[in-house]
Amino acid sequence: DTEVTQTPKHLVMGMTNKKSLKCEQHMGHRAMYWYKQKAKKPPELMFVYSYEKLSINESVPSRFSPECPNSSLLNLHLHALQPEDSALYLCASSPRDTFSYEQYFGPGTRLTVT
Amino acid sequence: DAKTTQPNSMESNEEEPVHLPCNHSTISGTDYIHWYRQLPSQGPEYVIHGLTSNVNNRMASLAIAEDRKSSTLILHRATLRDAAVYYCILRAYQGGSEKLVFGKGTKLTVNP
Image: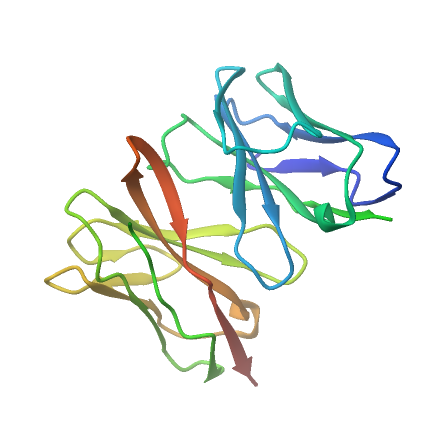
């Protein structure tokens, strides 16, 4: 199984809401990633988890809060977002937390903040 | 800092070869060149990567210039399913940490 799954596929939330994005992989990968992708732009790295510990935070605002409950799951908790946070949020995994390994991406969650 | 430059778009005909160029004139000796593609409504998908020598796999070939300042992704026979945005990416060290530096991507259109 070489699949990364993400739920929900689409999410609309108000600026005062709290919501969570979920990501799951069963490939035994020990590194997991969150990316943000605006329309017609390349993905931008947000967070990296290695062995369930946060190893990279690319200066992401605190209204985005990642969590890695176990080696297969990655969550992104959202609170008090702004309309400019509307984007496609991609999760990825790789065997280790070095970028020399192939990353497997999920299909993304399309987030709209109203 | 590492940077890649790609054409915004390219067109090809089905069953013809496609050569997607990437310029990375600021590449350093330890930077790897990766290519990913993103089909419509999907997450990116790994295509190929290399350091110095040309590389082949079942999806594509990667031709790297001798001075490593440019590379070309080659799809040997384009199909309609190859229509995607292709990203040329450098795996580089910046500020003491490893990073993936994405190009802006080339949107490939394949005509039947």
